[in-house]
Length: 108
Image (cartoon, rainbow, N blue to C red):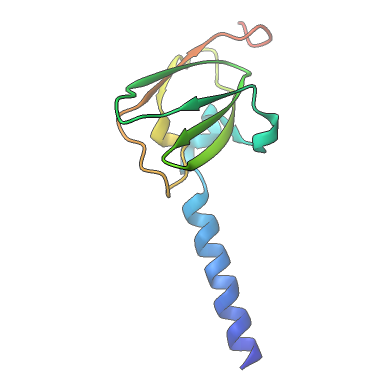
């Protein structure tokens, strides 16, 4: 019985982690980081259609009580991407574009 309980617990943990993880190609846009390292917070509302960030910046995105923090690290030729590509599966973020300005240390 203890083994079965352990297996069920591990399955629940992995399922939660999979839903919270960003999508597969998210690494092309940076990486998730701890929220205490954020340079700023961007509150997303139903009216939000775009956000502006700077390459090299760390931003916490908030929507409806949920949040995630992302360190923006794109290639120089990436100036725009869908926020849904980096958001956790548990957050419904559709139709919001991220515009990336060159950062001080990220210029070509």
